[in-house]
Length: 509
Image (cartoon, rainbow, N blue to C red):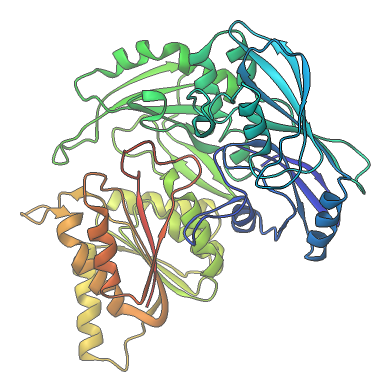
């Protein structure tokens, strides 16, 4: 997050495109909720930017600031300057004062720079109405690039950026630099502009929280590839199993080189994904570029650190799509009895321990994953208290044993306050005990509910993109009184008609 200004009354940030000012539903995160979850900043909305709009966004740090901001808007004592891209026009400067929704408003437009086929425009307003600049631009014959709602050409994002705000009580002009991709588009480099527009939605905005994020999500910009940033390195995954990693690298070399420059990365790896879950490895082959990548290194998320391996043919060691979920767990873990099922490398456990949970059990059948989990706990200096417990066991067997203990000794059984259950889609358990999440989901839901305290919370997740999401939700609804679907983080958007990258549910008993 880029903070442009902060005093004891106001907080001003450079908002990225792709996130709303306020959440749309309980499982969503707008900027207001994101600031609270990740930075413990309680802010109050003074003005809004559309989800696709980037730039200067002002919040009050106390409730009475909202009324003050309302007075500023009504008296038109603020001045806001936006920039956008649209087709060329013969006009160099003009006003549009057409009322919107029966309310008076005016926008001053001017042409700033002409490109090969498009132009950069400036729009100045004192008080904004809903979609004012977008609607006034469309009525002026220049709908914004990336604004199909008002007949603008399709693009990776809405090309509207709030660059400057003059606000009474703040002596300096609040300024957010223009997105870099504007220059690429004006220079008639649409593909490069598209890539950069997506990257700028996530990096460097997320760098205040982590040095890891997804730069390009699968399906974005019609690419069957995902590109993640882990510290100083990139990790790309190709989803066409028949295409070798080296070939994928050559096809995307210019893009990867550009991303390394933008994100200050030293190089990276390309992996091709295997669709057959019964093969021993998740990735068919690996191709690397740039400086040699260490066998393992540490990455940061908030004040915590995690070991990752990009050269491995399994997972890197940290699932980026659970970043928000880990912070949600940390918010409520203090003093709680926690169990992390299918713990993998124990990132949820680390968060719970750092939040001063009473005890945290990490259950997983893979000894290597638990070992790395123990290393993650030790790296963050959380092992000394002795409240981190690691159990190498099939989660189904562990759950059955807990249920027997509860049935046989109900008075001695201590329920759990918080349960995390994030199973793999497929797993081989040996001796015919393979795991398929769709088959096992009802048993997991029932088992977790039965070991959970009456006021407990359970976080369920899976990334079964080929499954029927309503089945997972409805199954949980049968055993929990309240189930909330949670959206993945900002850098894992739903693309077109493609199913969500991950299913996440917050369950209350």
